[in-house]
Length: 140
Image (cartoon, rainbow, N blue to C red; front, side, top):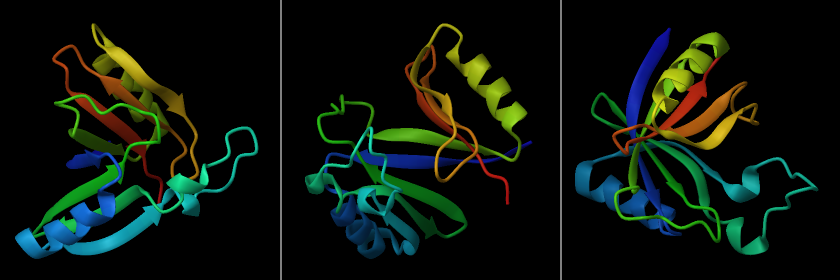
């Protein structure tokens, strides 16, 4: 089952600034902030020191709406138009696979589906209309 979709703002190293800005500008309530430094370390892909303070995921609440924010990884480009993506959350890995497969038709995969420290299955895909989707399985 699909649990919901949320706008996801991506910045180039200005995630903390964006959080403060939206708190002030639109009364956003900060529910959670995680930095790249909070991630479990992977010896095959160590997090560079300059990345550790950047935002990997922030969850804000604006009224009844969830707003997500993150920074790009060092060296990743952020083309114009990719600053806002859509985060789609399911509650079952099979539904995640189904949605991902359908969205990738005539589009392209940015990040293959894989297990992460926050989700049993997560991936990113740009659909045939140029919309980037972040698909997360949440089993709670």
